[in-house]
Image (cartoon, rainbow, N blue to C red; front, top):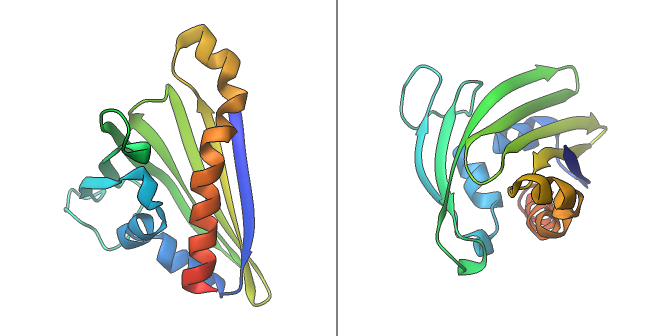
Length: 159
């Protein structure tokens, strides 16, 4: 399985950065426009639609059309883990249905004085069987523009 990582420092308290990333509004604000994101539904772990916080067990159904090219691609992601500790917080979403055979995205936040270190780690496999697995390490070429935009937007909105 291939791994993509990106880290940035945001001049904002952990509590603010964590709260922002814990909501659907945060997801929508941080997804670059070129992804053409459409959130179709969000269901909390208790079955309630549109929960205030993306808690463990939350299911998000969405569609994307990167750069407006090709058909819209459906994704279903599930928040599988969410935890907070002294000066740290994290959550993980796993693609339950969608274009990748494997997609596990861990979002980690660590307080460093008045700054929050924001880290994204994606463990993934590209589609296409043997060929997809062989070229998966090159996936960062497609992921980098999206995650760079997400981190810049986080800094602009919160820093």
